[in-house]
Amino acid sequence: MFKMLQDGKKQLKTHLSFAIVGAALAVSASAVAADPVKMYANDAVPPKAWREGTQTQGYVIDATREAFRRAGVELQLEAAPFKRAYTQAEAGEGWLTGIFKTPDREKIFLYSEPVGVDEVILVVAKGHEFPFEKAEDLKGKRIGFQDGASYGTFFIETQKHFQGDADSNPRQRLQKLLAGRLDAAIINPGEAALAYQMKALGEPMEKVVVLAKRIAVEPNYIIVARSQEAAAAPILVKVNEALKAMAVDGALEKIMDTYRR
Image (cartoon, rainbow, N blue to C red; front, top):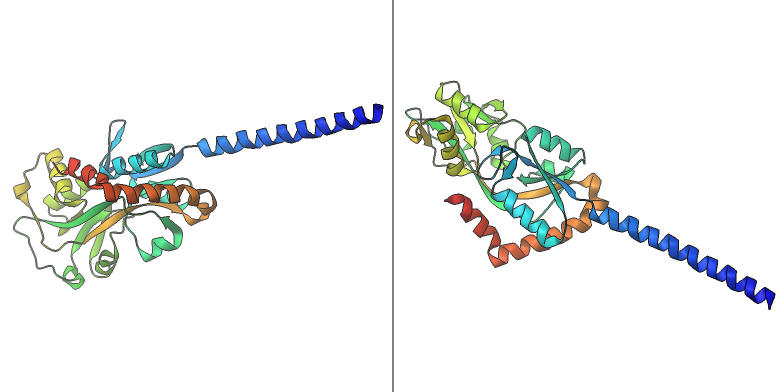
């Protein structure tokens, strides 16, 4: 009888130990799952993404927030100068939204479904237009663009021909253009961004001309470093499901329309 009681106590202790360990693991897993995803975005490309005081806004920002909300994943979003944001993402210290897809980047990052569409335009000072149909047409031209940016495969081809003048924001770029220090400035996303920046500078749109050919009209994506694949892949699956649903139910287009006004 005494032996049976001892055996029973041992079994109870064993069961309690497993229960405690199991509960601890469950709490730990829950805590990990609850950790918000750190997301970076460019702080100076309205209406796609920009920072106004302490607020981060833009159509890619809104679409990213909605996708993560639908995926049930908490998001911690920070707008920063593009080069710093990209470096942080490349180092695996966060995700990044509002990015073009290039072959080189695909070697480093996992990509989401499209989160928006970006139109990249070439702007010149009025009276200084030039023919632009192919990459070679930019030969010898001094072109301003975002430091660290890559606007797709055609842009990569044009870089072989023009003299690059990288900067940290489009407002600075347009100031150089109007001062005659650039032959052209690359601006994105589209004419809405140009109008926003010219208004901020107190300059009329009549001072500039948008060349007809676009540098790019391509989707934007959310990316995360491949070095983080083990932790990021399950989240990315949920986010992609949300983005696909948003494309079907019109949510992505509705968000874009809000910023086209």
